[in-house]
Image (cartoon, rainbow, N blue to C red; front, side):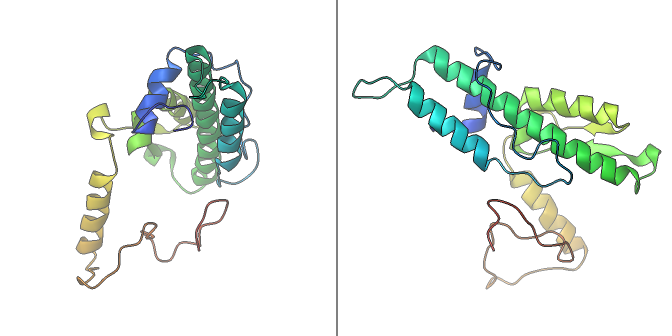
Amino acid sequence: KLLGLGFPGGPAVERAAREGDPTRFPLPRPLAGRPGCDFSFSGLKTAVRQLAESLKTDDAAGTLDPRDRADIAASFQAAAADVLADRTENAMALASDLVPPGHRRLVVAGGVAANLLLRERLEVSARTFGYGFVVPPLKLCTDNAAMIAWAGAERLALGLADGLEASPRARSPLDPEAAPARGAGVKA
C-alpha cells in the first residue's frame, strides 16, 4: 500500500522487485542473528514507510519514481527473506536435536510460499541443515483457505468440534498446549 502497488500485496511486491536493485536501500533485518525463533517485521515496515515518504515527489499526488518503487520493493523482499531464513534456520537447529535425520522436513505453505525468492532462500537453508524441502505447487499457494480446511479436518479427526455458537478467532491456536505467542504484534 505504501508503494501504491495494489492488492494482493505479496505478488505485487514480487513483481515490482523483479525490476529493482535489492542492495540499493539497506533495510533492517529485525531479530536476525539473535537466538530463538520469534520474528517481527514492525521495524522493517517502519523503515519502508519512512523511506517511501522521503522519496515521494513534491507534486500533489506525492508519487514515487518507478525506479525508487522497484528498488524499495526489491530491498524489502530481500530483507524479509533474510529474516525468515534466519528465523527458520534457528528453528531447524533446535528441531535437529529432536527429529532423526531421516525425518527432517521443512514445509513451506500458504501465500508466502508463492514468493520465488523466499522459496529459493528456504530451500538453501533446508539443504544446509540436512532437511528435505517440501513446498506445494505455486497454484496451491495463493491463500490460507486450504490450510484452514486441513486444520479443521485434523481437529475433527481428533474428535474436536465446535458448535455453531462458537465465535471465530483470528489467531486460534492449533495446539491448545502450546506456549503463548510472544513478540511484537501479538494480540492478547
